[in-house]
Image (cartoon, rainbow, N blue to C red; front, side, top):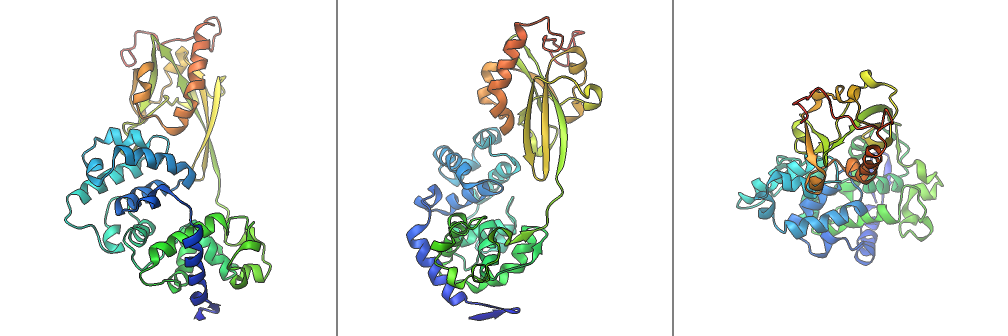
Length: 367
């Protein structure tokens, strides 16, 4: 046993159990089947803010189209974004593109987490994860699963502000587990152990090979309270969007924000002008700790004149070309329903809300 702070931590007993468990039970994920540093980089970028099951089909499609760093480096950014469509947080895709352009020009890749952290889109966690898993550095990358496993093993009763604070508190315990030369396996075993055995609700304790060393289990602490995080303040916002079709085309908006350029959404309206307008469809999405309720209204004069052009320019796009554009993930998912609604609107022109109106006054801004 080693003593860390005021707690004894049986790291010498825990690591062999995890390595043995990992060898037999780790998930067969596509970036593990044919291991490479490049595959590790792509998977780690995709897994930022995204669950494993969501990433798997994206990873398959990505590797088929971009099998090497050079393929990414030589691709146009619009194609990169298209293959990322639906994963969200598009700055990850842009950073991955820039990173591959840099790596393609390097004789050797970065060799330490510090060197990796100097690369685009690579923060403290990702730098360790790429190095430990892709290059077998002697380090542990504390993702949410590993944080949970370690916190439960020591029976941690701290309330953390966020995962960054939790990782800082638990880093010494993670470092104590390091088995030189075996950290690629150890990291993945810890991650999978947290994903399949030591889950957020802790439903697999009876079959857990670490239960005899786990203070949360031995002290009968409530599993779903370890680790504990301060409840973040949740914000909500209502957004109005315009749904307008004309002559086989649909009106879309691109963002003025650099990180979102080339990504299309339905035009956002100035809420102050149309507050309370009847909506034909409402969609909901969350970004960080903010929940957005997006209310779609079908074109009418007041609505077209209320497009918030400060958010980006608008253009008519042939509906047949939508498959080739990069749409924000939620808008891509909602698109079939929204197109159905526009079709219904066109055959019911007497409805004052549903009747299509195409910005009137011969506005060259829209036609």
